[in-house]
Length: 317
Image (cartoon, rainbow, N blue to C red):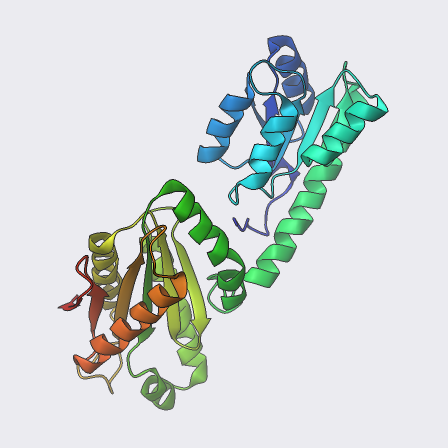
């Protein structure tokens, strides 16, 4: 699930045109150039590749194409958690009841008849993009923590099963890093809850800027506790992320006179889920949480992670 910014307009939206005829791609791109940003590809396979790199807001999909037709392409997109929320409008020369039924059954949200009517195409695209913007806004309100701008626990509960299924499908490890702010109650007692909220915002902002990949998700799971989902990341990578978390917070130099160091610090724990293993993701989460408490027992301002051999290791930032 990808949450888009609430400040976007139609002009910021992105339309992907999929058609094996160059003339059709040119006509639709020209008609829509004042509505939204447009890219075009010549096959369903190219559309899949495009969407693996960049997620459009809307796809205009030709139905009859060689190798893979539009119906099959739409079903592939719908079965992929990363692309299942992209609306697909079919562009077809046939508007028979049978063809319309196929379009709806494949997961399309609408269809436009070929040759396209300029007014119809422009207004239908505008309508679907406006709906997409409203949907994105609603999702941001539902899945985003209002104080920090991070994802929230509801996002974690909704998205984690899909992320695990994708890890199982691709055979890649999935790491979880959990961290919280050391002695945060004492920070609030000393500086007040308003300053405490400001502190949480600063930490979240710093951590978001330090995430190196768009697929990594920073989630506030409650109070001063955060979690990072790291797809395609093994144990050594999880260790590196823990080190970066501690270093990033240390660089902020937030004064905390009731901390042994005189500055705000965090403790972190991490564990790795391996696809199709006997372990469940819940066990991985529990192992990461145990590592967090191990780091705290080690004196705080440190991290612990489960190594490839299953043993926990402790380190400092």
